[in-house]
Amino acid sequence: MTEADAMLVIRPELAEFVRIADWTEAFAQATNLPGRTKFAIELCIEEAVSNVIRHGFANATPEATHEHGIRLALAQGESGVVLTIEDDAPAFDPLGVAAPVRAESLEDAAVGGQGVELMRRFARDLAYERRDGVNRLTLGFALA
Image (tube, rainbow, N blue to C red; front, top):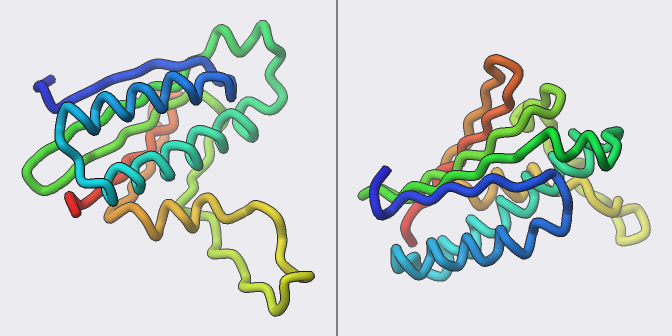
C-alpha cells in the first residue's frame, strides 16, 4: 500500500455514510483529486454501497449485520483512481443489470433503479467478480 491508497471497513448500515464521506474527503485532499473525479467516486460509492445495504443485507437482522462488513479501497495511480468494494452479501453482478427504459413522461418515470446506470456513466471502467463468497466491484476513474 502506498501513500495514495486508503482502506475502510464499514458495517452494512446507512449511518456509515458519514464515515464514508469523511474517508473519501481525506483521500481526495491527500491526493489532490480533481473535483470531477471526487464527485464521480462519491456518487459511485453511494450508489454501490447503498445497494449492498438495502438489497444485499435487506433481510439481515440488526444482530446479523454486525457479523458482516463492507470493505472499501481507493488507490491512485498515474492513469487514475481505482475503487474496490467488497462484501459478503448474496451474489449480485451489477454489470448484468439492463439499462433502464427511458420513460415517455414524468408520470411514467420510476423512482429509483438508476444507480447502476449512474455508475456506468461516471466510472471509466467497471468489473465484477464473485470469489470465495465475496462480491468484488472494481471501478476505475480518470483524473479529470
